[in-house]
Image (cartoon, rainbow, N blue to C red; front, side, top):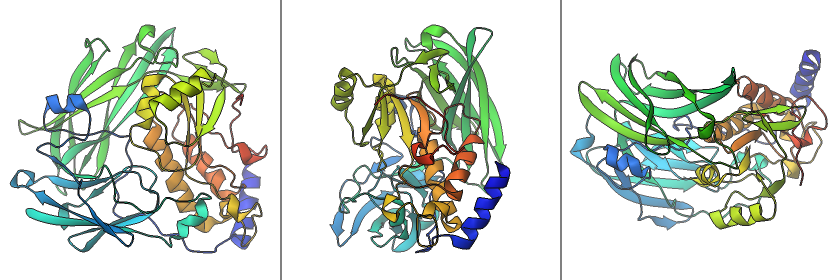
Length: 433
């Protein structure tokens, strides 16, 4: 297989399709799986992006000619803290300008994104402008009709400590007949000098009982990040499945020099998901999958209707994934294949020069970005039982590397590309349609 990989690499380098040069994302924070930091524990309990001391929704936009502008105020309370801009999923690539100065570009707009704008703002009134990039070369990665640019509903600016919680990850496994889970709290610093913060954590069962609690001190410098981990035993009654979509709750708070900087409340579902001979097993039990391919713009009523029709697995089509969709699937108990936003069928199946970009190494970075974003946006959610790097996109070097990169995460969930044509870069997952 490795020899085949080398041969295809050489072939792609000689005959790759390079119609346009891809533009790389700039200024965007690494994607995280939908967590919101709050100034108090009470506000964190709501777990929504509501206005607070450290969060200001951007509700009033002036839009014209593919651009939208809004104003916001940076109060004195945000001094010596990081300032971020949160953008909802958008239908197309966009640039961010703060105070008329370029602040970032998002080449993968289908997921919510954060931009660190600390150095672009000043105390008092500020402006932010979002400019649509209508002629983006990334259009070659999508074979769908995009929505007309609209002002970003759900955008907000926020403040967080210099050292803050960036993400949360979960890994569950069974050993000696019992389930255990490792919870990883990813902490990042925006400081250049060493900084030490204490991370407090408490895991609660659905009835509010404390399952595990503790804290850890972390020292980071030079804008680095690290992960605080703890392991907890999970009784079978608290394992998530579609039949019993039970979730626990992780409470976090960061402390620096005696002061608490942020509070978070994150729902967590614990379950194992593996494939044996093409059959999905959840918590060690085989599951017969009945799939429906749907657009990701779903509501609770849509999911209820699909379940009533016998569907227990959703395969999302490529497109913007609304914030909260994976949480909705977690709470309602339906399995999901998380789909990266790559569909290049309009380029045809020919992988020679001028053909499909899946075999053009110049597009490797764009393929990796989109598949890794799809993974990180969905990884924490127990409803997600498989990942798909693309649909209808021929095959080639870029999709081979996407498969290998996702496998290097150590995640036991399958990576499925149904158009792989029997090649090695797709795991077998039996599904009824």
